[in-house]
Image 1 (cartoon, rainbow, N blue to C red):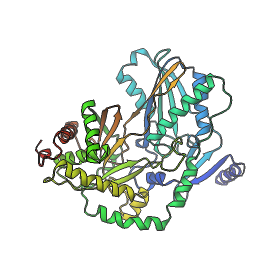
Image 2: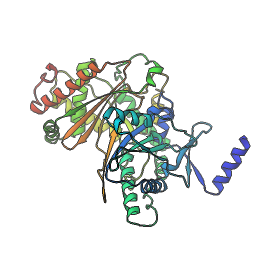
Image 3: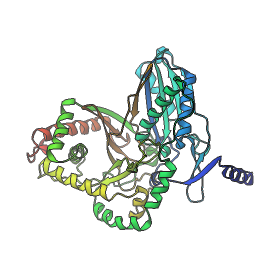
Image 4: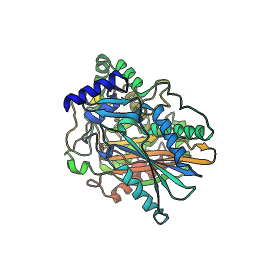
Length: 449
């Protein structure tokens, strides 16, 4: 049987039915730098697409098929290898889409969340694939809901916007009778991975490692002992709050006046709140970076994003503005010296182990990648991402810009925190941000809340 598989694989390769590629650097992070198995459902990215209008199932399936043909990650699975898996990319694959009638009695928010949770947590077959699934729930004739669950190995938050864009374009072309599929992206995911491997030669990584050894030396962690490995496999709990449009606008204006960015203003408020709340002013925080600087990858689905550890001690005797200046500069330095996280973990000799995340255990993110609200003749489409968080960190703050409003999603491990504690942290964060916008140069005021 084993020989039969090898023979079949060789035949597929020779006929170009499949191609094999090494893991990309972000994919390697899932296998080399995470205490959670890559196949665990906590590595699923979840979203739902709200549609208003009559959606023909056959047209929806045909549109999804065109996206599968355009985006190679939709035809990708992972083949076990000697040291680590390899990407197996099929030349052709059928769209993984299902349709179901959703009873009107279950259309309340709780019923919808249960239906989405069922789709999100269903495991993927990492070898056979596909590593995504789409389920269309028909709530009424003109009110369908598309639920998308996709594995982190083939997608990041940016990819969801690319998926919706392609799906809407393919659906519109089909309805207008335009023959043929969508044009391929200017750069495929495997092409991007090859270019990244060519750039990140060992000597380039070795040049940047001294910065990181110095930058992270002595940084604090909120947990000195490993977390129960079984608890780490449980989904993170979520609490959502919102920063008002007035405070959101004031924060952006404050960032401009300070010569900083909204990201570093929010990060400084988060770090001060964390220091007040947890008593640790020098915690290393992991922050995602889009990693899409190469020309042509904005339209490509795949796991591109990386993680950058950020560290800057908060000084109680300094004003918010003074702390912001140091946090901003430290963040600029860190992003300028970024290297693939899997290589950073290897270079720092801080491998993951059961209950232990390498380098950092707190995450902070400002999600400002494109999230389209697309218009298709006869339909209105809106993507809504669900901040589920992976189980690779214990505490997270994910902020999404919604116009002037800021949605703040707090993700936390239930075995470590109660929701009341997280709410206290959330209220503290917002109070510090509001005070900073009113009195940025007032010393100690921020710490007297």
